[in-house]
Amino acid sequence: MASLDRAELLINQGKIDLAVEQLKGVLLEDPDNAYALTYLALCKLRLNDANDAIHTAKMALASNPEIDFALYVISAAHLKLENFNKSENAIKKAIEINPNSADYYGLQAQLKLISKDFKVAIELAQKGLQIDAEHLFCRNMLSTAQLKSGDKEASFQTIHRALEMDPENPLSHANYGWAELEKGSHKKALGHFKEALKYDPHDEYARSGMLEALKAKYVLYRLFLRYYFFMANLKPGTQWALIIGIVMINRILRNGAESIGEYGFLLSYVSYGLIFFMVSTWVIEPVFNFFMRLNTYSKYLLTPEESKTALFVGFCFSIFVVSIIGWAITQSDGFVAGMLVGYSLILPVGRLNMARASWVNWLLILYSSVSATVGGLFIYASFVSEAGIENSVLVIYIGLIVAFSWLWNFVASANK
Image (tube, rainbow, N blue to C red; front, top):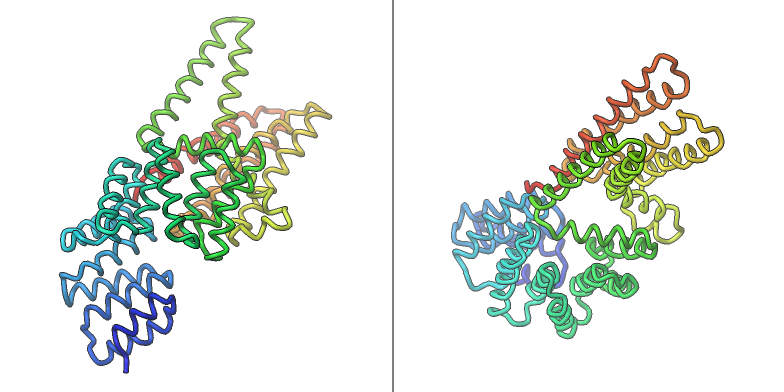
């Protein structure tokens, strides 16, 4: 006979499919059983069906509005879908009904980490630990928040304690790995990511961390990671201020180059270097994914989407490298155009398949195709045109790339 207790036991054992069968049996006898619906919603979330989990949890709330755990499931599902505001609203309601669950404070702390409210995240994680001093998720959220707020010593003490409590916990190992990576110790980070994947081979957090740790073997990528972590710890408004500041400095340099005469070319080179740096921070990650794709072992760490995108990026990067060689031999303007297009086209192409929404990915494909077509026309015109049409095409191409960089940064920094 189906029972809720049996279903709960199966969920705790990770036997989700069997738990679903038990819960369906309960619901056959009592279709409005709010607790069975809530557990079924949790199972659907564990099976990565977040939308159905939300729908089922709402059915549970319709039957009994006071089931706080159903709100927790809704919040966790919205978090998985990156609907952060909806997730925040749901977990707040859950805490209002039941302020004595460490799970709820841990999830809310995670949301505050995403919005970069690190001090609030620390407070929430500590509230959870006051309820349950051995709550591993709260301890992991506390460690991450301490690291992001600059208290590295406290962060490592917290995560070390988490591993003492459960040496086989994949989340603790993955968090320790990311902390070591941010500190610059990529070899130690790699060890913790290996441990995390040993205990949970499907842990996406650990998989992406191991990929970053492998890329961090290269000095250039380690420098990029320092910049990445610096920017990632800033709030979106501060990120925009910094980007706008760089753009303004670049404009000042260009104006200065025009006004100081024969030595103005020096400022022009600084300006070009600044532009190259800004573009490089966007293209270095997809370029290194391409190198990982070529590696016999690390290519298996890439998801099918990342692997496919890496091939497109590799094609763009090949155009860039071939153009450098061609320009060194011939000094042709066509190869200069090839360098510009091959390098900058990685901006949109490297973001293919990164968006969760399929319509956004289709827009990325369309945008990349249009940019590639205009870029190809610019290269062709630079080789053969005698009417100066390449300048007009260049303006259109640069407009497309600049517009993409601003639009993507806005989308990436905005919460849904």
